[in-house]
Image 1 (cartoon, helix red, strand yellow):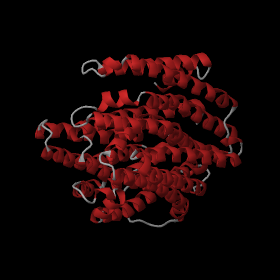
Image 2 (tube, rainbow, N blue to C red):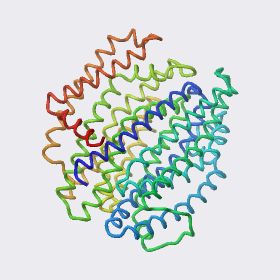
Image 3 (spheres, one colour):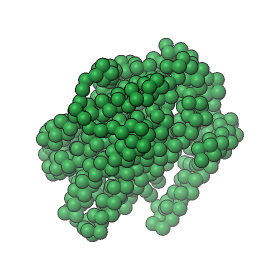
Image 4 (cartoon, helix red, strand yellow):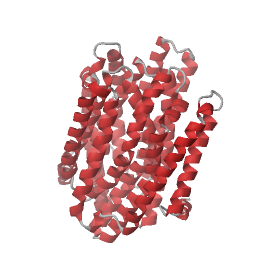
Length: 524
């Protein structure tokens, strides 16, 4: 895959991921308006986070990071053999996760305690258990969908896999609309609980829809995977040997999330504040970071198999350059104007000014860590493409210690925001370790001269944009606080930031605007 083709892949995945994240953001705005940051909101968010946590552990983390390089190499040699390997992996995952889903439903009270023990003494606990039992089977459907997405991505077919997540958000929005029609707009306690129940049922329905979409796409691509009796083949044994360290690394990441939620569960409203802030900074992270990781991993795997060191270095350098060109300005904006963003987008219905202030604080802290999370997506494929899952596991252990020390140690001093600072600082620690470890991989893991020259200029353009945003936000404080003018005022603020960034970036040589136009024309 040549660099222009690689970038077109980024555009495809990034574009659909952006649509999904925008829909997800609209979903969260609607959830905030319907549920606020009260007990039902916190119970639902914890219930939904449980299958998502294990999804990252089983599918998007360990299994896919091990599966995609092996499948990509088999696909280069024999498509039929690659199909058999994918079918065996599909059957094995379906068997294991069916048992796991049943166990999760039965043991849901213990899982809720493990996730948020601060819920034990109040009404949030029974609500979280009830919603969790409905939502947990999502882990089965979405994990199988993730495996099929890996098959499609390794085959160079990014569209269906990138579009699938949008289905879940559409179903969430539909559930809220139906709930509003059935229950009415009066947000009494009983109505809010009904909204929570409707959202809980939307989770497994969304998983089934995503699985159906990518299964049909894989079948059209020649990979018609069906359920069959699991068998432990030599290829699956090799897959498991590679996946186990990645699973442990994924487990460490989930421990970080658990620590953060445990700390937040002892501060009323904090689980919801952190979740809404997380969703906003996930817009650029999901659009760019996930697209980089999805497209870069199979490409690097093929290049390493072919001995193409120069091509691997070019792919890695363009991935880092493009990801930072798009996420550094987003990070600066989240740090510079978090209050206007949260106030205009979320403050309505059950979500009040106090919720806005707390969520904006968390958003600014997460924004400082955004470049780190995107860089991880570009650096990790260097290891996984070489079938090295042990080094990322060791690095993740160090990041876990950083996360726990900051979250637990600072919580008595700075309250719920300690969980956000822990996430950000652990992210930067992980990047430092990944970058240091990649030095031994040779030229293919080093940035080329173009990337090294452009990165400081990208940072300068982002900083200039941030200064302008702060000044404009101060000047627009009146319209931003107005009921009728806040939406156009925020739109103008965002547009001014985008125009100033691209203008400054072009002037200082951070990038050429013609490069963006050329890549999008190629995509069309």
